[in-house]
Image 1 (cartoon, rainbow, N blue to C red):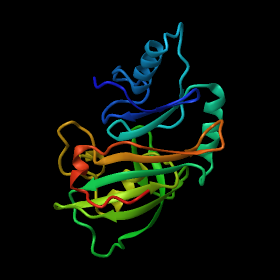
Image 2 (image 1 turned 90 degrees about the horizontal axis):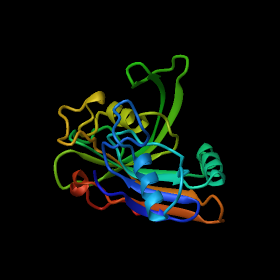
Image 3 (image 1 turned 120 degrees about the vertical axis):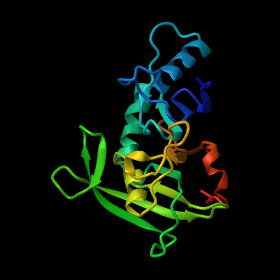
Length: 229
């Protein structure tokens, strides 16, 4: 397992870069989770006795890499959860890559609005207005690439399950390796072409807006002129 990569830490926050294919919380696979790894690091780093508190504020799908924030105190957890409920308080930008060409009818930037319904038994999301569907809003911008395929910068305005994966697939650009939503072949490490690149949020105890960035994975190396966020 890769060592925990710390992006920021203070008395209330722990921000880390999640590797692809690592679950954020324990699941049926029984693999060590990012939460387990972070708790172990804090316990060792600060010589803490007993159980270490660490609040899960948000999640990324297992095959997705990028910025993840944990709360180190219950006060921080409560305030961060409140921030996540406000659509204009937290800003989340992702890099995405598809081996499909950019659709000729699609503008180079814009907003996708979709109603998504989750089939929990299959862990799959579809575009549908049936009962239980929720609206998903995604801002997108084309990113130039030095090889075939398409690059995108995505801002998840809402935080629906599989929102960005479905949005790209519906636009005709299924993400690299994302077999669930139309990719032709898997990536070698079973990741997908989606990376939580930048995250901006209000600090839970200070009047300060924080921004964190996780270095893009190797599949993003062909994406040039990344947006200045």
